[in-house]
Image 1: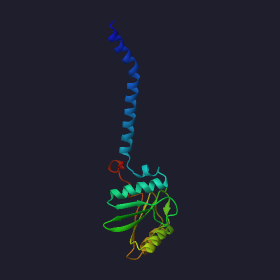
Image 2: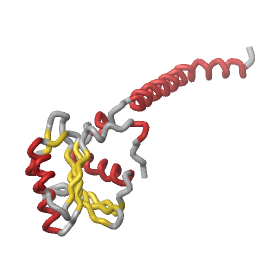
Image 3: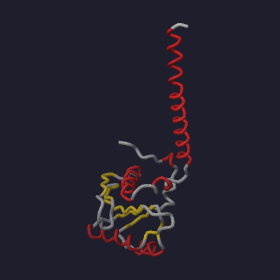
Image 4: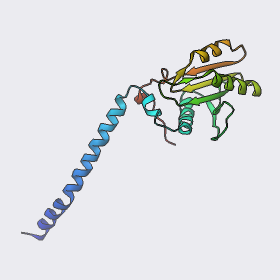
Length: 170
């Protein structure tokens, strides 16, 4: 047997297990990608984030919705706002709440955001939550007089397909 043939067999014997492991990892990655691609609720992904990570995620989400000049406020007392941004030359205060599906935004949280808006003369507010609004919070929102306006994006509106919304890496 020639020396080149022996080296060829030796290389095949040594690298076959590595190639098998590589193929297995590629297959596992593909299965995981398909699982996330078929996930019908974006909520399932964002619920795993910490509250501050959720605020950062919300800033990316707002960017995809057309908001600009997005600034995530530091961790700590926020006076009812987590993000300050603009859309169509109007300033917005954003409150982000990562809650479990059966948790509700209270009227106090709506009033806290509204108080921040009034004190800084900001006309527009937005609450983004993975939970929902309590009846009292809905009533409070109905009572808000012009020129102030607070909209809400709840878990129902976050039910986007994962394949339609993926965070862009910088």
